[in-house]
Figure 1 (cartoon, rainbow, N blue to C red):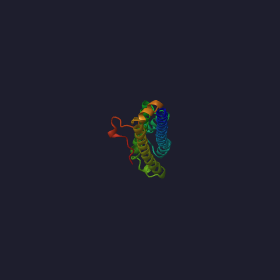
Figure 2: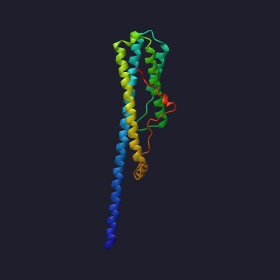
Figure 3: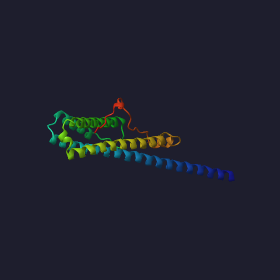
Figure 4: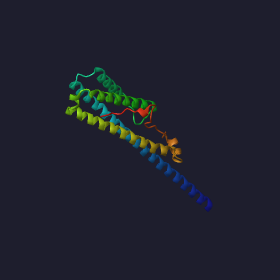
Amino acid sequence: MNNKKYAGYIIAAVILLLALWMFSSFNGLVKKDEKVNLQWNEVQNAYQRRLDLIPNLVNVVQGGADFEKSTLEAVTQARSKAASLNVDANNLDPAKFSQLSAAQDELAAAANRLIVTVEKYPNLQGTKAFTGLQTQLERTELRIKIARQDFNESIAVYNSAVKSFPTKIVAGMLGFPPKEGFQAVAGADKAVEIKF
């Protein structure tokens, strides 16, 4: 009779330990998932800073030079395309994610072409407004790079937890799939870079 009693206590203790482990694993996964969302928001903030800065840069350039219309139009169109795309942190769909990344890279390339073309206009290069915007754009590109790096690091931590045994069991049961971060695309060795 005592053996049955002890066996019941042992089974109850094992069930309690399993429940505690599941709660702990779930809470850990939630924290890691929220960190991914937070880092994605930082990427979005950096992208928004670029989107806000580009029109000011275009206006200063347009006002300060008899400028090539096609260059300004390319920048405006690339900005419009990048601004129209939005990826929700809670639904990081790989296709939308890639589309947004490509649009942002296209915007960076158009801004780079604008800066390079401005070199033909020494009077514009010397204006305080252009110099300030140029510096802000350089800092924005650095912020984007850092935000993307931090996002990828949070994805790696999250995916490591989701794919590791035994947490993988809880992740599978409670709907925590692996996520994708920024990856190098074909031709990334010739990545778009803002040059000053």
